[in-house]
Image 1: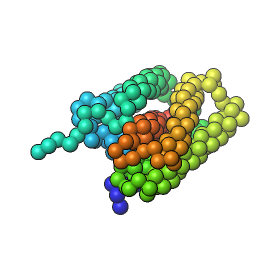
Image 2: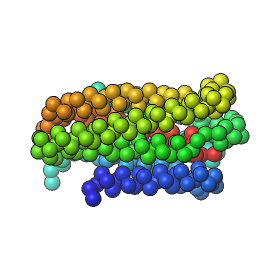
Image 3: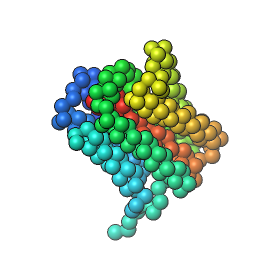
Length: 81
Length: 193
């Protein structure tokens, strides 16, 4: 199994996890926290491996990751604070 | 040890400027959603229950898989010999375009059901954000499909090789951005309450 297929399988698994949270209406702080962490992981896998930014040096690599981290942090702040 | 990392992202730099601008634009929409939700959490939670989570879930799987197909097409062009790369990349790209089409059909049917239920942009603040965000994303999927179709046509005539595939990488990067935006949209709009 190649690297891209492994990443695709991880993305599918994390999406099923997210759907399970919505389907069973699980809304505890811990579960929503896990959902946000896995959303960050999913996005970062796409950024690093599908977009190929893991092969790039410096700022151009980190701009999308910083964007994603900021959005997830703001969602968390909106949810918890 | 020699550093093999590149100084610039894959594809044309221009497409990355567009990607950064799109991320910023969607980021502002997300910020607006988060801020408005804080002001009326009960309304947002109650409205969210009216959404079809299954459709959102299926569409997430579709976009992730479509993105995977595109990355396989780029990988085929980079690593296989010209003829085999051409054949395989064409199939992967056609698969990605097909999945993009399925995404649009599912999303459109969601919109139709909402309109039939009398729900639209002016129903309440949640649905204003729901329609704005998902319709804006919908348009990006359509544009992405047009780009993928052009990549497919150029791949078909052998326009990309292991040493020259910058255009393919540019289009692929745009499609991955469309996927990335949906990865954030799905939990934000459909799940978190």
